[in-house]
Length: 360
Ligand SMILES: *Cc1c(COP(=O)(O)O)cnc(C)c1O
Image (cartoon, rainbow, N blue to C red; front, side, top):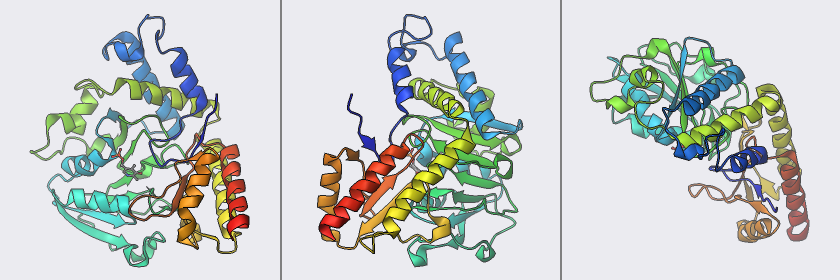
Protein backbone atom coordinates (compact mmCIF):
# COMPACT_ATOMS: atom_id res chain seq x y z
CA UNK A 1 0.00 0.00 0.00
CA UNK A 2 1.47 3.37 -1.05
CA UNK A 3 0.40 6.04 1.44
CA UNK A 4 1.32 9.64 0.60
CA UNK A 5 2.76 12.05 3.11
CA UNK A 6 -0.24 14.34 3.54
CA UNK A 7 0.42 17.97 4.56
CA UNK A 8 -3.05 19.23 3.68
CA UNK A 9 -4.64 21.92 5.88
CA UNK A 10 -7.91 20.02 6.20
CA UNK A 11 -9.49 17.65 5.57
CA UNK A 12 -6.20 15.93 6.10
CA UNK A 13 -4.38 12.81 7.20
CA UNK A 14 -6.04 10.41 9.60
CA UNK A 15 -3.93 7.96 11.60
CA UNK A 16 -3.45 4.80 9.53
CA UNK A 17 -4.60 2.69 12.50
CA UNK A 18 -7.89 4.57 12.52
CA UNK A 19 -8.44 3.99 8.82
CA UNK A 20 -7.55 0.33 9.20
CA UNK A 21 -10.00 -0.19 12.05
CA UNK A 22 -12.75 1.62 10.15
CA UNK A 23 -11.93 -0.60 7.17
CA UNK A 24 -12.11 -3.79 9.20
CA UNK A 25 -15.44 -2.84 10.76
CA UNK A 26 -16.89 -1.32 7.63
CA UNK A 27 -19.48 -4.00 6.85
CA UNK A 28 -20.11 -5.26 10.36
CA UNK A 29 -19.94 -2.85 13.28
CA UNK A 30 -19.86 -4.37 16.77
CA UNK A 31 -21.38 -7.63 15.61
CA UNK A 32 -24.54 -5.99 14.28
CA UNK A 33 -24.03 -7.24 10.74
CA UNK A 34 -24.47 -3.61 9.66
CA UNK A 35 -22.13 -0.74 8.93
CA UNK A 36 -21.99 1.96 11.61
CA UNK A 37 -23.44 4.18 8.86
CA UNK A 38 -26.47 1.94 8.58
CA UNK A 39 -27.62 1.87 12.19
CA UNK A 40 -29.92 4.21 14.08
CA UNK A 41 -28.29 7.00 16.03
CA UNK A 42 -30.70 6.06 18.82
CA UNK A 43 -29.65 2.42 18.88
CA UNK A 44 -27.88 1.19 21.97
CA UNK A 45 -24.63 0.49 20.09
CA UNK A 46 -24.46 3.98 18.65
CA UNK A 47 -25.39 5.71 21.90
CA UNK A 48 -22.62 3.74 23.58
CA UNK A 49 -20.15 4.83 20.89
CA UNK A 50 -21.22 8.46 21.29
CA UNK A 51 -20.88 8.42 25.07
CA UNK A 52 -17.50 6.72 24.86
CA UNK A 53 -16.20 9.42 22.50
CA UNK A 54 -17.39 12.10 24.92
CA UNK A 55 -15.76 10.35 27.88
CA UNK A 56 -12.49 9.96 26.01
CA UNK A 57 -12.47 13.61 24.96
CA UNK A 58 -13.18 14.65 28.55
CA UNK A 59 -10.35 12.46 29.82
CA UNK A 60 -7.85 13.65 27.21
CA UNK A 61 -8.56 17.37 27.70
CA UNK A 62 -9.44 17.10 31.41
CA UNK A 63 -12.76 18.80 30.82
CA UNK A 64 -14.27 19.92 34.15
CA UNK A 65 -17.66 18.40 34.95
CA UNK A 66 -19.62 21.65 34.64
CA UNK A 67 -18.82 21.76 30.92
CA UNK A 68 -21.10 20.21 28.30
CA UNK A 69 -19.55 18.52 25.28
CA UNK A 70 -21.71 18.87 22.15
CA UNK A 71 -21.30 17.04 18.85
CA UNK A 72 -22.83 19.21 16.12
CA UNK A 73 -22.75 19.75 12.38
CA UNK A 74 -22.09 22.81 10.24
CA UNK A 75 -18.33 23.05 10.70
CA UNK A 76 -16.39 25.63 12.67
CA UNK A 77 -17.81 28.27 10.35
CA UNK A 78 -21.28 27.69 11.70
CA UNK A 79 -19.93 28.42 15.17
CA UNK A 80 -18.99 31.88 13.92
CA UNK A 81 -22.77 32.56 13.96
CA UNK A 82 -23.91 30.07 16.59
CA UNK A 83 -21.61 31.54 19.24
CA UNK A 84 -23.03 35.09 19.11
CA UNK A 85 -26.61 33.77 18.82
CA UNK A 86 -26.15 31.78 21.99
CA UNK A 87 -23.84 33.88 24.12
CA UNK A 88 -24.75 37.52 23.50
CA UNK A 89 -27.72 37.49 25.87
CA UNK A 90 -28.70 41.10 26.52
CA UNK A 91 -25.17 42.45 25.94
CA UNK A 92 -25.27 43.46 22.28
CA UNK A 93 -21.48 43.66 22.01
CA UNK A 94 -18.56 41.22 21.92
CA UNK A 95 -14.77 41.55 21.77
CA UNK A 96 -12.65 39.79 19.14
CA UNK A 97 -8.90 39.42 18.66
CA UNK A 98 -8.04 39.78 14.97
CA UNK A 99 -5.00 37.64 14.21
CA UNK A 100 -5.51 36.30 10.70
CA UNK A 101 -7.93 35.05 8.09
CA UNK A 102 -10.06 32.85 10.36
CA UNK A 103 -10.59 35.34 13.16
CA UNK A 104 -11.46 37.82 10.39
CA UNK A 105 -14.20 35.51 9.20
CA UNK A 106 -15.47 35.07 12.76
CA UNK A 107 -15.62 38.85 13.15
CA UNK A 108 -17.49 39.29 9.90
CA UNK A 109 -20.07 36.65 10.81
CA UNK A 110 -20.68 38.09 14.28
CA UNK A 111 -21.29 41.59 12.91
CA UNK A 112 -24.69 40.37 11.78
CA UNK A 113 -25.74 39.87 15.41
CA UNK A 114 -23.90 42.42 17.49
CA UNK A 115 -21.55 45.35 17.74
CA UNK A 116 -18.16 43.70 17.28
CA UNK A 117 -15.21 45.43 18.93
CA UNK A 118 -11.75 44.41 17.76
CA UNK A 119 -9.86 44.41 21.06
CA UNK A 120 -6.50 43.89 19.34
CA UNK A 121 -5.26 43.20 15.84
CA UNK A 122 -2.05 42.18 14.11
CA UNK A 123 -3.40 43.14 10.70
CA UNK A 124 -1.04 46.11 10.29
CA UNK A 125 1.99 43.82 10.32
CA UNK A 126 0.42 41.24 8.02
CA UNK A 127 -0.60 38.86 10.85
CA UNK A 128 3.02 37.96 11.57
CA UNK A 129 2.47 37.81 15.34
CA UNK A 130 -0.10 37.59 18.13
CA UNK A 131 -0.71 41.06 19.61
CA UNK A 132 0.89 41.71 22.99
CA UNK A 133 -1.57 41.19 25.86
CA UNK A 134 -0.72 44.63 27.27
CA UNK A 135 -2.19 46.15 24.11
CA UNK A 136 -5.61 44.49 24.39
CA UNK A 137 -8.37 47.04 24.66
CA UNK A 138 -10.90 44.90 26.51
CA UNK A 139 -14.49 45.86 27.21
CA UNK A 140 -15.66 44.60 30.63
CA UNK A 141 -19.24 44.75 29.34
CA UNK A 142 -18.62 42.52 26.33
CA UNK A 143 -20.65 39.31 26.21
CA UNK A 144 -17.44 37.41 25.54
CA UNK A 145 -13.90 37.65 24.14
CA UNK A 146 -13.25 35.52 21.04
CA UNK A 147 -9.84 34.39 19.85
CA UNK A 148 -8.51 31.96 17.26
CA UNK A 149 -5.96 29.79 19.04
CA UNK A 150 -4.18 28.84 15.83
CA UNK A 151 -4.47 30.79 12.58
CA UNK A 152 -4.46 27.99 10.03
CA UNK A 153 -3.73 30.23 7.03
CA UNK A 154 -1.24 32.73 8.47
CA UNK A 155 0.52 30.25 10.73
CA UNK A 156 0.43 32.28 13.95
CA UNK A 157 -0.52 30.64 17.23
CA UNK A 158 -1.13 31.94 20.75
CA UNK A 159 1.72 31.16 23.12
CA UNK A 160 -0.62 31.55 26.13
CA UNK A 161 -4.34 31.64 26.76
CA UNK A 162 -5.31 35.34 26.69
CA UNK A 163 -6.46 36.91 29.93
CA UNK A 164 -10.11 37.89 29.86
CA UNK A 165 -12.51 39.53 32.29
CA UNK A 166 -15.51 38.12 30.38
CA UNK A 167 -16.20 34.56 29.13
CA UNK A 168 -13.43 33.51 26.78
CA UNK A 169 -14.41 31.83 23.51
CA UNK A 170 -11.81 29.88 21.55
CA UNK A 171 -11.80 28.77 17.93
CA UNK A 172 -9.47 25.81 18.37
CA UNK A 173 -10.37 24.29 15.03
CA UNK A 174 -6.84 23.56 13.89
CA UNK A 175 -5.18 22.98 17.27
CA UNK A 176 -7.54 21.08 19.58
CA UNK A 177 -5.89 17.78 20.57
CA UNK A 178 -2.49 18.94 19.31
CA UNK A 179 -1.42 20.57 22.58
CA UNK A 180 -2.80 20.91 26.10
CA UNK A 181 -5.49 23.54 26.62
CA UNK A 182 -6.78 24.77 29.98
CA UNK A 183 -10.50 24.27 29.43
CA UNK A 184 -11.39 25.87 32.78
CA UNK A 185 -10.13 29.25 31.60
CA UNK A 186 -12.64 29.21 28.75
CA UNK A 187 -16.37 29.73 28.49
CA UNK A 188 -16.52 27.87 25.21
CA UNK A 189 -14.14 26.04 22.85
CA UNK A 190 -15.05 24.78 19.40
CA UNK A 191 -13.29 22.77 16.71
CA UNK A 192 -14.33 20.96 13.56
CA UNK A 193 -13.09 17.38 13.36
CA UNK A 194 -11.31 17.41 10.01
CA UNK A 195 -8.01 18.87 11.26
CA UNK A 196 -6.86 16.81 14.25
CA UNK A 197 -9.90 14.82 15.23
CA UNK A 198 -11.40 12.91 12.34
CA UNK A 199 -13.43 13.61 9.23
CA UNK A 200 -15.44 16.60 8.02
CA UNK A 201 -19.05 16.75 9.16
CA UNK A 202 -18.61 16.88 12.92
CA UNK A 203 -17.83 19.83 15.16
CA UNK A 204 -17.11 19.59 18.88
CA UNK A 205 -18.30 22.37 21.20
CA UNK A 206 -17.17 22.40 24.83
CA UNK A 207 -19.25 24.91 26.76
CA UNK A 208 -19.57 25.98 30.38
CA UNK A 209 -23.07 25.10 31.58
CA UNK A 210 -23.35 28.53 33.17
CA UNK A 211 -23.46 30.11 29.70
CA UNK A 212 -26.43 28.09 28.48
CA UNK A 213 -30.01 29.35 28.27
CA UNK A 214 -29.37 32.86 26.99
CA UNK A 215 -29.89 32.31 23.24
CA UNK A 216 -31.30 35.22 21.24
CA UNK A 217 -34.98 34.84 20.33
CA UNK A 218 -34.06 34.49 16.66
CA UNK A 219 -31.94 31.38 17.33
CA UNK A 220 -33.36 28.30 15.61
CA UNK A 221 -34.04 25.54 18.13
CA UNK A 222 -31.60 23.28 16.29
CA UNK A 223 -28.77 25.79 16.98
CA UNK A 224 -29.57 26.42 20.65
CA UNK A 225 -26.74 24.98 22.77
CA UNK A 226 -29.04 24.47 25.78
CA UNK A 227 -31.44 22.37 23.73
CA UNK A 228 -28.64 20.47 22.04
CA UNK A 229 -27.10 19.71 25.43
CA UNK A 230 -30.43 18.56 26.88
CA UNK A 231 -30.93 16.22 23.90
CA UNK A 232 -27.34 14.92 24.22
CA UNK A 233 -26.51 16.18 20.71
CA UNK A 234 -29.40 14.23 19.22
CA UNK A 235 -32.04 16.89 18.56
CA UNK A 236 -31.93 15.49 15.05
CA UNK A 237 -29.76 12.91 13.30
CA UNK A 238 -26.14 13.64 14.16
CA UNK A 239 -23.24 13.08 11.80
CA UNK A 240 -22.90 9.43 12.77
CA UNK A 241 -19.96 8.24 10.67
CA UNK A 242 -17.70 11.24 11.48
CA UNK A 243 -18.67 10.87 15.16
CA UNK A 244 -17.53 7.25 14.96
CA UNK A 245 -14.25 8.25 13.28
CA UNK A 246 -13.63 10.87 15.96
CA UNK A 247 -14.21 8.16 18.57
CA UNK A 248 -11.55 6.00 16.93
CA UNK A 249 -9.17 8.96 16.71
CA UNK A 250 -9.61 9.75 20.41
CA UNK A 251 -8.76 6.13 21.28
CA UNK A 252 -5.65 6.52 19.13
CA UNK A 253 -4.68 9.67 21.07
CA UNK A 254 -5.06 7.72 24.32
CA UNK A 255 -2.93 4.85 22.97
CA UNK A 256 -0.26 7.37 22.02
CA UNK A 257 -0.04 8.42 25.64
CA UNK A 258 -2.43 11.36 25.58
CA UNK A 259 -2.05 15.02 24.86
CA UNK A 260 1.35 15.62 26.50
CA UNK A 261 3.21 13.08 24.38
CA UNK A 262 1.32 14.10 21.23
CA UNK A 263 2.32 17.70 21.93
CA UNK A 264 5.94 16.79 22.44
CA UNK A 265 6.10 15.02 19.08
CA UNK A 266 4.29 17.92 17.39
CA UNK A 267 6.92 20.32 18.77
CA UNK A 268 9.70 18.12 17.43
CA UNK A 269 8.05 18.02 14.00
CA UNK A 270 7.59 21.80 13.91
CA UNK A 271 11.16 22.48 15.10
CA UNK A 272 12.55 20.29 12.34
CA UNK A 273 10.63 22.14 9.65
CA UNK A 274 11.30 25.66 10.98
CA UNK A 275 14.99 24.78 11.29
CA UNK A 276 15.01 23.63 7.67
CA UNK A 277 13.48 26.97 6.64
CA UNK A 278 15.71 29.13 8.84
CA UNK A 279 18.89 27.29 7.83
CA UNK A 280 18.19 27.61 4.11
CA UNK A 281 20.09 30.88 3.78
CA UNK A 282 16.95 32.75 2.76
CA UNK A 283 15.92 30.27 0.08
CA UNK A 284 12.76 29.58 2.16
CA UNK A 285 11.16 32.16 4.43
CA UNK A 286 8.53 32.07 7.18
CA UNK A 287 7.70 35.53 8.44
CA UNK A 288 5.91 34.75 11.72
CA UNK A 289 7.70 35.98 14.86
CA UNK A 290 9.35 33.06 16.65
CA UNK A 291 7.21 32.86 19.83
CA UNK A 292 4.04 32.73 17.74
CA UNK A 293 5.03 30.24 15.07
CA UNK A 294 2.32 27.62 14.72
CA UNK A 295 3.13 23.99 15.41
CA UNK A 296 0.15 22.99 13.26
CA UNK A 297 0.52 25.00 10.07
CA UNK A 298 3.81 26.23 8.65
CA UNK A 299 3.39 28.66 5.75
CA UNK A 300 6.51 29.67 3.85
CA UNK A 301 7.56 31.26 0.59
CA UNK A 302 10.48 30.70 -1.75
CA UNK A 303 12.75 33.70 -2.22
CA UNK A 304 12.18 33.23 -5.94
CA UNK A 305 8.41 32.78 -6.32
CA UNK A 306 8.91 31.64 -9.92
CA UNK A 307 10.24 28.35 -8.49
CA UNK A 308 7.04 27.61 -6.57
CA UNK A 309 5.21 25.62 -9.27
CA UNK A 310 8.26 23.40 -9.77
CA UNK A 311 8.60 22.97 -6.00
CA UNK A 312 5.00 21.85 -5.64
CA UNK A 313 5.10 19.60 -8.70
CA UNK A 314 8.31 17.83 -7.68
CA UNK A 315 7.04 17.52 -4.10
CA UNK A 316 3.93 15.72 -5.34
CA UNK A 317 6.07 13.45 -7.49
CA UNK A 318 7.95 12.56 -4.29
CA UNK A 319 4.70 11.71 -2.48
CA UNK A 320 4.54 14.97 -0.49
CA UNK A 321 0.94 16.10 -0.95
CA UNK A 322 -1.21 19.09 -0.02
CA UNK A 323 1.57 21.70 0.20
CA UNK A 324 0.00 24.50 -1.82
CA UNK A 325 -0.60 27.61 0.32
CA UNK A 326 -4.08 29.03 0.94
CA UNK A 327 -5.40 30.96 -2.07
CA UNK A 328 -5.54 34.23 -0.09
CA UNK A 329 -1.81 34.27 0.73
CA UNK A 330 -0.23 31.93 -1.85
CA UNK A 331 3.14 30.34 -1.19
CA UNK A 332 3.58 26.95 0.40
CA UNK A 333 2.02 25.59 3.58
CA UNK A 334 2.85 22.40 5.41
CA UNK A 335 0.26 21.33 7.96
CA UNK A 336 1.68 19.08 10.65
CA UNK A 337 -1.40 17.73 12.36
CA UNK A 338 -1.32 14.80 14.79
CA UNK A 339 -1.52 12.11 12.12
CA UNK A 340 1.49 13.50 10.23
CA UNK A 341 4.47 11.42 11.29
CA UNK A 342 7.97 12.62 12.11
CA UNK A 343 9.16 10.51 9.15
CA UNK A 344 6.85 12.50 6.87
CA UNK A 345 8.31 15.78 8.12
CA UNK A 346 11.82 14.37 7.74
CA UNK A 347 10.98 13.44 4.14
CA UNK A 348 9.72 16.98 3.52
CA UNK A 349 12.81 18.50 5.12
CA UNK A 350 15.11 16.31 2.99
CA UNK A 351 13.17 17.22 -0.14
CA UNK A 352 13.44 20.94 0.68
CA UNK A 353 17.19 20.73 1.21
CA UNK A 354 17.66 18.87 -2.08
CA UNK A 355 15.47 21.33 -3.95
CA UNK A 356 17.35 24.32 -2.52
CA UNK A 357 20.67 22.75 -3.44
CA UNK A 358 19.62 22.20 -7.04
CA UNK A 359 17.89 25.56 -7.51
CA UNK A 360 19.70 27.83 -5.04
C1 LIG B 1 -10.69 25.14 9.16
C2 LIG B 1 -10.95 26.24 10.10
C3 LIG B 1 -12.24 26.82 10.23
C4 LIG B 1 -13.38 26.45 9.33
O1 LIG B 1 -13.80 25.15 9.51
P1 LIG B 1 -15.04 24.59 8.66
O2 LIG B 1 -15.33 23.30 9.35
O3 LIG B 1 -14.59 24.45 7.25
O4 LIG B 1 -16.14 25.57 8.78
C5 LIG B 1 -12.41 27.80 11.18
N1 LIG B 1 -11.41 28.21 11.97
C6 LIG B 1 -10.18 27.69 11.88
C7 LIG B 1 -9.10 28.18 12.78
C8 LIG B 1 -9.91 26.70 10.94
O5 LIG B 1 -8.68 26.17 10.84
